[in-house]
Image 1 (cartoon, one colour):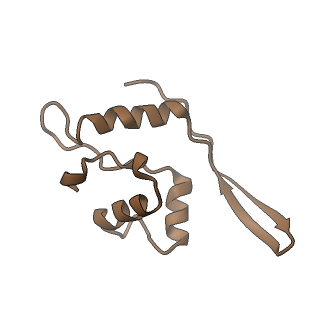
Image 2 (cartoon, rainbow, N blue to C red):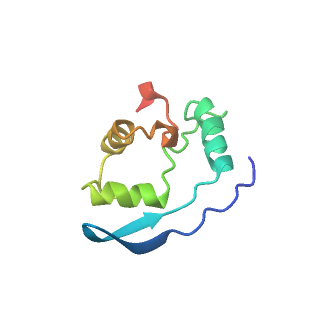
Length: 101
């Protein structure tokens, strides 16, 4: 397994446009993290010994967006989380095989 660059902490700020003030949340996601997810996805969600592995790896900014849209990852089922990720074109954070979820 590679040593990943660390995620930057989330950055929150306030900006203004013609509609008024709005809050934003930002986090840089290193490309080597995404490369590692691709590698993990290739093993179809299981270790060589057949033990289960993680289903998804979701950055904080995505978890915050999900919560903002009404889906709390700490309360939701795996099916709901995967459905939200797929509906928002974020399949790259899903590690499990589609027929195992």
